[in-house]
Image (tube, rainbow, N blue to C red):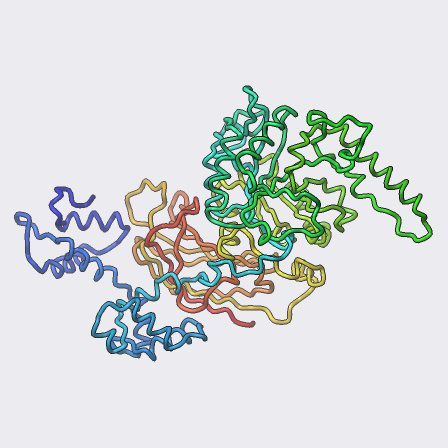
Length: 623
């Protein structure tokens, strides 16, 4: 690109243009001195000096020499021009708080990073090898042990947060935006484990997916199921839930059931009988769970009611009276009394079935039953197997404020799915953190809309190998310590998280930037978690330097519930008219590595920038 005439060399003007593309603000005089020093063979293009490929690489390496990294090297090498094996061990144990590091680990590091054979033979490390080490993936901020599935996956599904998408098919807004099969592929590849299918009758007898009664485009149901079949387990082996919003006629529900059965086959989890326990993610590996309306079981037992595939029920009523009623446990009641109550319950279920229209086969393959909130609000204990309650954003937020412990109690026995308000026609998102804090497992977000909510979601589900399932802390699985969330229980020992933002490297310009000048970056650090823990910090602005800005600025956050805390870093370009978002990085506090750590930057869509890094120093200690 920079080599305009294609002769394999770059003159000084071409080098300056390339540096500008790389967002490197280098004084012209200094660049000229470095250029002349790198031109060792003195080949030219007419009267112009040029650098060949090897010379340019050497020029660039010298230019990108990072003072702040060299300072760390000099500190642990004790002023020598190299680090001994003992120096490397000291760096790992004291500098990086890797207390289990061994001499053998240091030898492996030298073998991997040191290219100078003489130094390697003497078990010494050069400054260049140290730079490669400190920027390597295993030395980054995110704990590499959390990049694989390390949590217990044999607990009931209700014990996990689940990475979830709302209106998965939409690429833009909810009024006239396009629907795309590719949105399902994207979500699944990013680790999403619960996707939504808004199903309606198609004009040709084939069901379609779109945002009903709007101008959003339509996609075929079978195309989406084919995509799910191909991509469901590409990123994670753990179960995928298809959340069906079923608006189809009986005829096209039959088609839906046939399509899913024929394409997904034995991937569909469809137990023959209701199991006696809620399954675990481990039990359901490589399985697809169908979530939706389900026929009352009693309706299938009736002999005098003509049940056919085309005469069944489907829109789950808000109040499931039959399911929430219970037998009187008083020992004075005789069996006849119990039988009478059982018969009344059975008749109530049949009455439900007559009111609702649902294809029998679709009901059979549906293993996660959607139930109404009213049926469990006053009776949160489980009354049926494997059900999920969907709660809109506004209602969920009210419950967080007015009855948080009840919300958490319900989540201990059932899955709770929350979703954005219907008034968010622009597909914007709500804050997922309070929902997670109160035990809600399936916090569905508009994946197509970048912003803070999706960045926090990215951070939450980076954990546990990006499997899409993250184990909830124990205090959300029982109510004994739930006061940690509400603040009614205070921990004696808090944690202090000390963060020093040291520098940045090759920070790009904003994606939609039209200005030619170099950026003026600053870093914002936010701590999200329980309400009492929220905090933020902003560095000063470094003018005209996106290549290697240096801050050396420190903040300290006090954290009472680190198990729920998420760190979010954003890098922003200050501008007179409007500050421009450049990139972000989010991760759980419990996944932070202490010491001198780099982290990469992601663009607003969650795609990682190549080469862009922020350099930090982190400590996490008892307050």
